[in-house]
Amino acid sequence: MNFDSIKKIQNMDLKDKKVLVRVDYNVPLKDGKVDNNKRIVATEKTIKHLLDNNCRVVLIAHLGRPKGKVCPEFSLAPVAAEVEKLFGVPVHFAKDCIGAEADKVVAATKNGEIALLENLRFHPEEEANDAEFAKQLAKHGEVFVQEAFGTVHRAHASTSAIADFLPACAGFLVQKEVDFLGKALENPARPFAAVIGGAKVSDKILLLNNLLDKVNVLIIGGGMAYTFLKAKGMEVGKSLLDETKIEEAKQVMAKAEAKGVKMLMPIDFRVSNEFSETAKATVVDQIPADMEAMDIGPKTEKLFTEELLKCKTIFWNGPMGVFEFPNFANGSFAIAKAMIEAGKSLATVDPFVSFAVAQASMSANQAGATTIIGGGDSVNVLKKGKFNQKEFSHVSTGGGASMEFVEGKELPGLVALAK
Image (cartoon, rainbow, N blue to C red; front, top):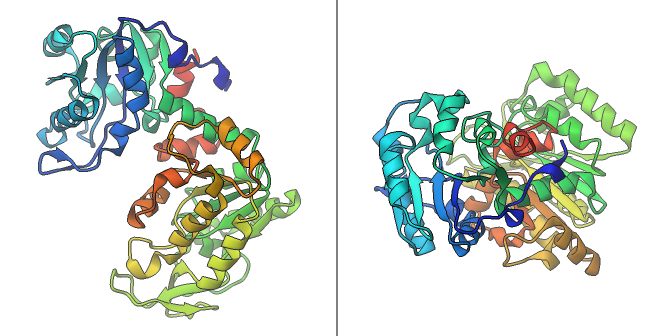
């Protein structure tokens, strides 16, 4: 699709208007409070832009999976307090997102203030992409801003149908996601490396095939690596293996060879005979028949790191091992460290630096690379290892959305904005 056809928030006339904003405030709660506010902070630039334009800001979001029913444990009420604390303006909370209760709260909200409406997914019509439900949501705004990149791969009422009833545009966070994930693939500084891990080959086949048309280097790790190694004739012991995907793994390797893409896989492993948090790691070059490989080994870390330090654009999606277990997190942490080292000249305190600025900075300092984390478990690796996300050019908030975007799929929420 043509992303240039998507209207941007900064180009809209928003002065004194009532603006409906879809945000991704699906945040963890603990003891009735927000336990991690990073997703709220990620919307800061967009919401402050609206408040600076004296807008009445109406936020809609989901939390958890209530499956179309009202579940008190998934109420957004605790989020309202966090939003008020962060933005320093009154936040009015409505106990529903449509109907008389929502109408009353939105009407009582003044310009320069915020209304947060209750969980969209308390209504089954949200996930059904129901047009009438979207029309009722649209009553709360004169303009619609999409700021929840993590939901744009879903054809839901608040991401897709809503754009039929209001002028729609992309907020700053969505713009940054499209900018990095799109332009990094269209026009990367080279060499361009992709590091792909995770458990299942079946989850990554589309991603791998799309990336092979773009990258110079493809690095494979995680549980999926053992299907590739088996396809090469290597014994993998009790390691994670998808026998049904061995032929597809061979096809991926053949495509890489045909396209001249350098493909790297693990050359040593951290193994154990038990799958548990307390399992001891043994480093081996060949996986014993009674052992399971649960992480890449130190030789592989060195191999992967040396390759990444030669690259000018690096995309990472998926851990190198069972990073949740302390003895098998080393490989994933090594990738994060290598990317930080590769991108040192691009470390920035501005979370909204554009892809173009990142690339220009890289050109000015040949030591630097544009480093992109593709969401999901890779982000959890950063949290587990207490890495500073500002040391990467871009850390996607999208999870499944970022992966589908890089796979080349059209995302309903972005298609809706381009109408």
